[in-house]
Amino acid sequence: MPLSEHEQRLLEEMERSLYQNDADFVAKVGGTRARPAYRSIVLGILIAVVGIGTLVTGVFVQQPLVGILGFVVMFAGVLLAIAPGKRIAPDPDAATSSSRGAKQGKAAQAGFMNKLNDRWDKRQDGQG
Image (tube, rainbow, N blue to C red; front, top):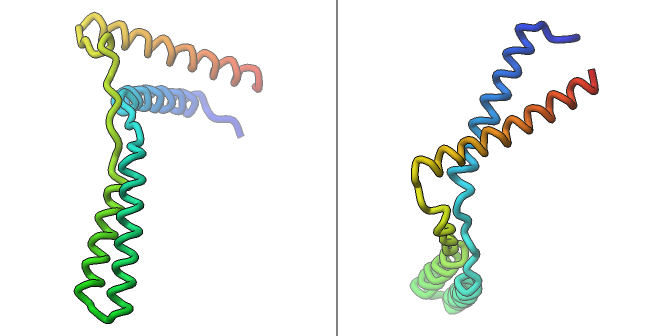
């Protein structure tokens, strides 16, 4: 069942809105990427293993205080292992936030979105 012209216009408007919102989100979030800190991961795993060993030892010798201490050590190791890594420093050339650079970025982003919209329209025309 084909859509009416009004429904097609609404759908296209919603698509454009989604493309614009997604582009803004990617620009905000995608700028800096966290690099995994392998040293922290390995150290955290080792500390967690020591904590598990202490926990098991506390249960084996029936000393709740030792078991609780083991759990705390294990928990600290896990937190260390899953801690976010170091942020990659942004490119110094990209760090300059002049209004001209921002306008050029918006224009390039708009050009990219226009290209995507054109490709989408061509694909839809070819199928219809």
